[in-house]
Image 1 (tube, rainbow, N blue to C red):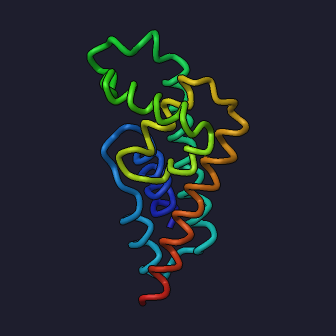
Image 2: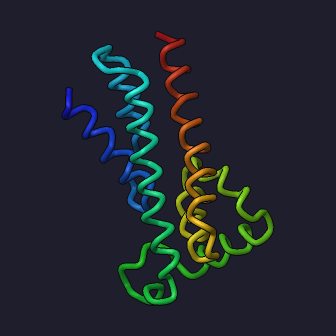
Length: 143
């Protein structure tokens, strides 16, 4: 069982970074197995996903040092687009951090824009925890 929880943590962590990973399928699979605690799964998925977003936030804080490196995962055009969006909506745009494609760059831009870590953690945890909670409710409702 520990392997399932660890797998979910690493899938959620990786999915929150700019890596092309998905944690929702892992969560649904573990829920459907019936061998895991719902609340522990939700806590682990949320924790892993939020910590992955913190990696993006830290990269954003250092973007000026790394943005011209070949390995840097965000193009200048995407970074500029995300900055404009973030400037328009401010920290409330982090409520969209759970969305595919735009969520990860938003968390990176929050670091670029020097969003305070406490507020970043609060909003991102709310957004990502709610996503996993809704997914779990839908999964358990349909079985």
